[in-house]
Amino acid sequence: MADTISIIIGLIIFFFIFKLLFGRSENGNNVGNGRGRHYVNPEDVTTINSMFPQIPRSAIEADLARTGNVNTTCERILAGEIVIPTEPIAAATFNGSSSSRSPLLGKNILKEADLNKPIEEPEKIWKKTTEERQMDFSKRKLYMYQQARKRFLENKEKEKEAATE
Image (cartoon, rainbow, N blue to C red; front, side, top):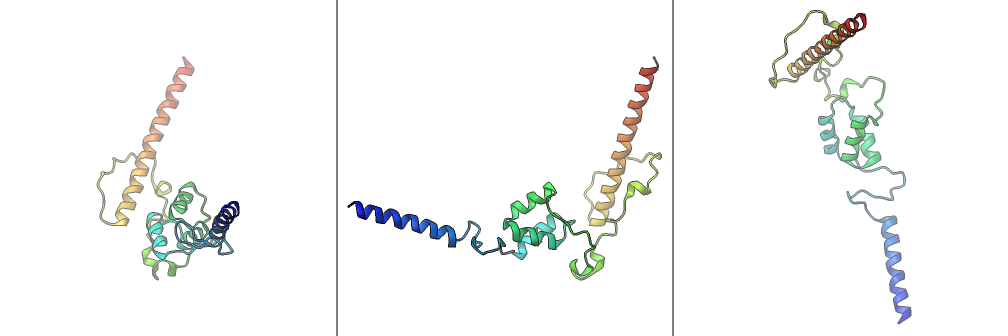
């Protein structure tokens, strides 16, 4: 009887070790594939790329191959842990045309704007095109920057007046 129990326990231990070494992980990727690389589903890359268009597709693919998990890759992007290549990405990466890139991405509206000229608060309406939304976002950013600068200068004046009294 004792031999039977020890054989059953041995088989159970052997089964778990075998499953650990040669089994599959929860998301279906091979655990023991040698280099720690996971299968990258193109749909997952497209999904993450639509959420984070500023991150190159190649960087997303590389991180997904390393982590094997969409949520982990998204968290790494939000935490700033994804390494983005410094060389410019070829236009072929963006669906084969250079026109798919927004012309506003390279502009810095704060550098071009007259910061002393007050502007009105932009409308809070969702625009139809990406370019209009980007321009609206830039105007809103400029407006908020001017408001913060105005408050800063007012506080600085109050501190000067309090110091002279």
